[in-house]
Length: 238
Image 1 (cartoon, rainbow, N blue to C red):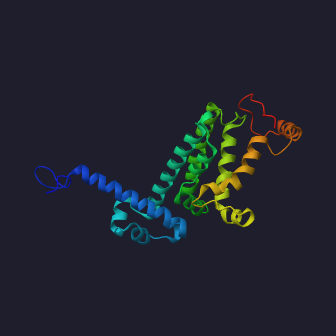
Image 2 (image 1 turned 180 degrees about the vertical axis):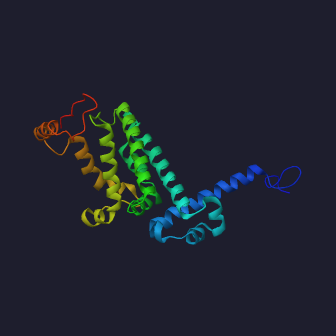
């Protein structure tokens, strides 16, 4: 008997079985990302995911229980990918490399998955967005510490706005392609420069003049619904 397949006393090596289970789980999850991206969670089936992964539908059920459980696993995997990439990007400080950062921005089928997933009006999607906002608060704070990101008077609101801008762009990716010939789901992230340059210009230098911003602050100061500043950090002059 191959020692990798068995152990003393016969039977299957439990460590090998665990490794095989992990491999199957990853293969099923990755197949689900592609199937859900192509057809949406509502229209994709456990059977189509199983066929794409090259396993039985029973094995998919064994590992994930239901399509909702499989989608939840995909949500968590995508969140983890974004955490890792954004922490690496924004925590780089003086080592920030623009081209490599673009390459790190592209997360394969996860991008198409999010574009399809986010249109669902469900508690699961709300939870996904909520967790993504909390992550954004954390990695933007790391970006402040590394010097890549400017401090904000409204750290939580800023994180939510930036995240919703980015997620909204994924949902509207077909219009980005139509209007400025940028495929936000493309496999070559370098072509995202057409998108990234004007976005970075706006986020770095600002869109409105300092005078316009000061007027807005004056109005906000008289509005009880405006969020109170959480620090005394001034807005950086463009």
